[in-house]
Amino acid sequence: MITRDALPTSTTNAPERRRMRGGGVVPVLGQIGVYLLLTVLALVVIYPLTWMVLSGFKSNSEVFANPWGFPGEWRTENYRAALDAGVGRYFLNSVFVTAVSIVTTTLISAWAAYGLTRTNLPFERVGTTLVLGGLMVAPTVALVPLFGLLQRLNLFDTLWGLIVLYTAYRIPFTTFLIRAYFIDIPRQVDEAARIDGASLWQTFWLIILPMSRPILVSAALLQALFAWNEFAFALVFLSDGDLKTLPVGLMDMQSRLLTNWPVQFAGLTLAAVPMIGLFLLGQRQFFRGLTDGMGK
Image (cartoon, rainbow, N blue to C red; front, side, top):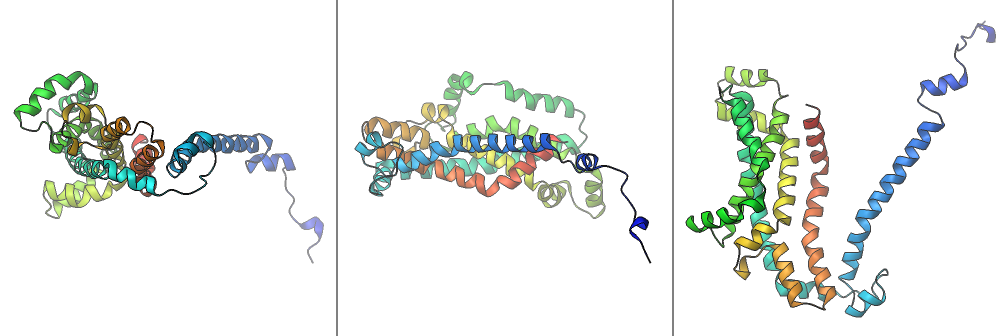
């Protein structure tokens, strides 16, 4: 018969056991502080967006008389008026420029990063330095030479001209980002593919790219944010009103609708929704790609 005295007893007291389990007052207060900080940050981001969306449903008088409340009547005609004022056309132009620049920038940068990390070229270090040097060139400094270059290439006042500029200016940063991820992929993967008869391109396209999906999603999202919100190039290199992208188009709409604030808020909402949705869809891969890249 097993008696109580025969049962094993713990050699540690209660505070010691709480410390070993990670408990205690200080960690709990720390967690509460973190949650409070995250709550405040979430409110700082969510509240202006909510206010913008609600203002798009109000009348002009309600925007000033009741700026913090819900609209008395949900006026969807403000959103239709925004589309009729040109937001729909600007939206399609931005979608085209953003989508094509995402594909071109990500593919070219991934191929460049693969070459800089896998081919053992004698000028690998020099090539990496040249790519990083592209980060030092401010876009506004090159406006004048780019103006002449686009005219000579017959790309001035075209959406393809914007795509070329967005791709060229984002390749250095995107290459640097993807290169950091490629470095930690074991070279044995490439060697196994070679043994199986895969060429350099097949190894890159069929093996390395699928393994690098998180960082590719991160690069695509960052390029989308840049191309969707870019203003200076679109303002300088586009003069045709039908080719304007959303940032420049919304500025033009604001000058035409000086006092119609609900329609302007509706236009801003339509411009913001795609990027918010895209980020929500790819947030898991986005953070995974960035954190994996930083740890390598």
